[in-house]
Image (cartoon, rainbow, N blue to C red; front, side, top):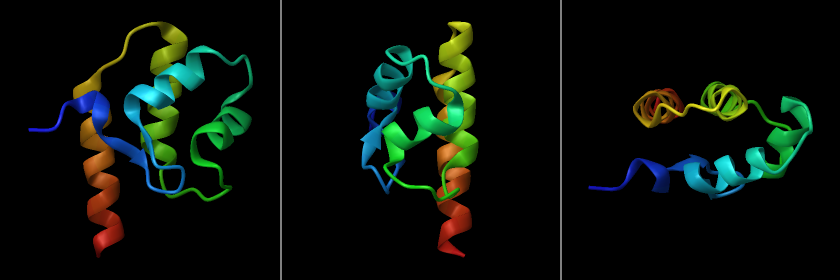
Length: 80
């Protein structure tokens, strides 16, 4: 089974959850601009998991299971 930190959070930037966490930790940019560092695009396809992760990093506690749930929900929506 894939570790939760190794799940791809956004296919546009092909970044994992762990990579996104590191990017968010090392920037003081607001969400909208920090998101572009992770995704490399302006699309809203992965807004929910990224925004949740950004807020979790900002507050210092990351719930990997919630992030995995949001990623899976996003992927299910995109399949339909």
